[in-house]
Length: 439
Image (cartoon, rainbow, N blue to C red):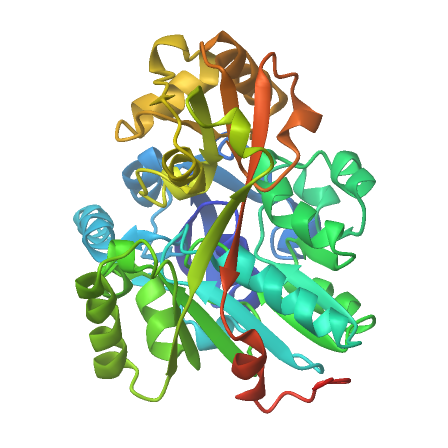
């Protein structure tokens, strides 16, 4: 029996374990390691999920302890199982593992894909922040409008009590409250719920899929970061971002998504240069010549243009896009420029608590606030930071009702963005049977 470690970030790592190692007597998983997401290490993957071979559960340690665990637990192999990292980053981790005396590899994509009894459309990306979520919502909305029972299965974000998150079903805002969802979770679930579409998520995706199939004509896999689908898709759509041209070749596992895709959507063509767009097109022709390549625009709108023009504005952006997504700005900054704000206020002198830690970890973040909220304390720190920063207007560019979670002492404007593409044409390229399709 091999002693192994699974490196993760509370999502893909648990799925890899469930699919490949939970009942595998050839392997003994001595630990998970955690990074990217705060407050994960120091807990256990509970026995109710780990199975009969792990009656005490499996400990989760900080990734900084990796070398020590390898040596202390006589580990022979380490499996890398999280997303949105460069291949250079993976090479550094491989070097650390090998120096500690263990072998290193990434997870196998095919062996971790479940098979569904229903048609599956997977919407994935090559990086965090490409515009994947608006595409998922647009497709779900279109299929629902045509009379299909659409159920979205969302990539995992199990940051709370894992025993209570085996299978989660979200059909109302009350469900979000009852499950103590983080801001990151709400950003993904709430827009679907507002369209009357049910969302499933959790930890055990075999159980999640079987429950979702009972109320779905079509399942949409709504991917996270740049991860691969957990369910084998009938139609695999992947979003690429020309503003980060060549990242589709240099980031894991987004490169695999790019090479597997049936349809590649090059988004943000209205803000990218032709040179950037051409780089992505050329990579698609070279590495996935069988894919259909579609161009799309991300259209930004705001709830009140007059509250922006000529004003000093504070921008609150989607968190993961700025942190491990590596973007320097999002829809909020673009809205401030488009609608002629006088000044984009720098919040950094006013940042407090756990939000300050985010800026220390990601020093590239400058004239904006990432909407971080992995705990009640972090949500309070976000509120205090926003309210302490002098501005005429707050631009809220996260897709949730942030004003529902915190009290904002200034005028605020909601920033929305949607992806414009011929989604009906994209769906017609697949062999998925549409229950009702009005011409």
